[in-house]
Image 1 (spheres, helix red, strand yellow):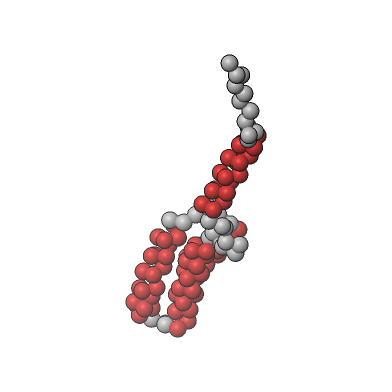
Image 2 (cartoon, rainbow, N blue to C red; image 1 turned 45 degrees about the vertical axis):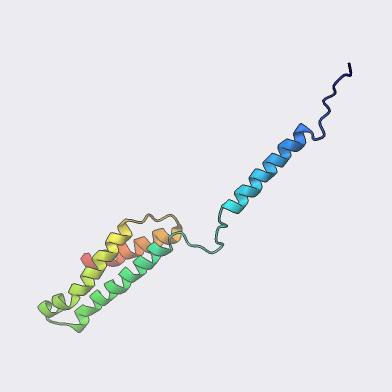
Length: 115
């Protein structure tokens, strides 16, 4: 009876390298490429900037409107808009120095008026 030989044509190492290479290629195409200039805190920064614009308008109203009742009435929409911004800002977490700086700037702008 003839003797059977089991001589593989592909080495185990070659199969392993091929499997790893295929897995890496699949993973590389499945993941989105990170944007080079993407700012993780862009939304938070924009909200803080908008809050600061409204806060400056509120502070300026003291120079523009002498009567307290008229000023309070005029600033009603500003306060409502700021409350909406604060609610949206509270749902976000700063993750970068720019995000923390924007949030701190909004707090300082508000605190300066509050004190």
